[in-house]
Length: 252
Ligand code: PEP
Image: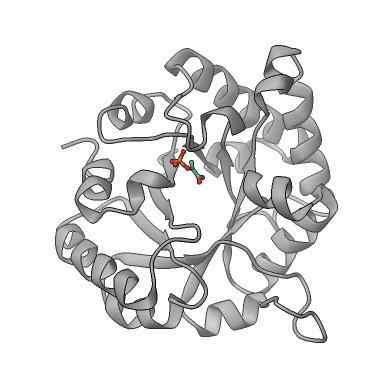
């Protein structure tokens, strides 16, 4: 089964509205000839409606970096899937390690957010990954088991059709340390086999599993050549359209 690669940029808490529009406009120009690769950027929520205008009609799609699982209500500081969609988002990054680490996001909240995304017509990108200490203690597989089993616990495989997974070893995020191709291949194969066990072969074969963690123009081709790697979730290198387009064009 062929899975369309997805190259997703997480802009985190960078760029004002005008800066985000300028970078997105440049990316739209650079990416205009790209076919057979899905492209997404996730600017800050404040920039989202502005960037939505800049990417309208292009092959650059938008995402949010988080959303809340209720539709509306007294939840200060939060936005719902419906609100994100109305502002132009087609994807949502869910359970990023920075949200787990700094904002106390639990697998239970992650699960509700994945469900809210799917119900709201937004493609969730569920982030999973072990810390350096957990890898050193040989807990990588059990951590991933728990994050996937608990993060998807109320789903059947049909519900999960739109789901994207992103394996992001926490020790490789923003550190310049990329996991080796052997490590990435081993984990991605493991994740796909776990999805097979939990939800069946059809979903396991169709689900896109991205790698994230210091992906750069000079390491993307090798990572993307691995059979179970279906794209990249990119932080730092997505902030500059000239670097990001080299990642998007990894096979050219
Ligand atoms: C990320 O934020 O998901 C990420 C992978 O960041 P970086 O590419 O900077 O390591």
